[in-house]
Image (cartoon, one colour):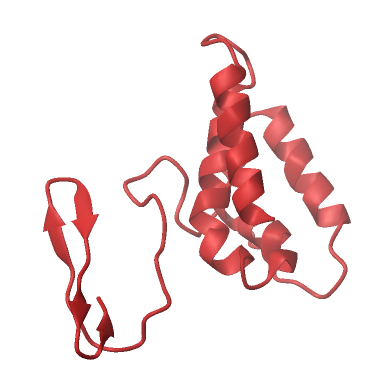
Amino acid sequence: MIIELVRDCADALAAMPAGHPKRRLVRTVGDALRLSSHVLIRDPLQLPSQLWGRLPRDECKASEAMLAEAQHHVIRPWLRPVTASLTHPGGPLLRTLEGHMGGGSMRFRSTRMAGGQSPHGTT
């Protein structure tokens, strides 16, 4: 589900003219979904908490309306951040990678990340 939502945001952004008034909102939401994907893949019901924790407040009425709508679809107790205190979209972090518990090393070249294989698992 989350991968499709991120892709939908990217497709919508690509189809929008450069001066479209909702372009910034679509980019911000897509970036927030990408930043949240490592959590939402495991538990899609955390979408409202992730949006409340990542999206800036008072930036535009559409953003506020989307957060209010997300809050109305909560079906279990949840933590609603008072402020957007998680990593915000638009910063240097693009995505969180997780899944490997063993030791290893990461090698970086320029702005690209490279991984490798060790006797203890993927690095």
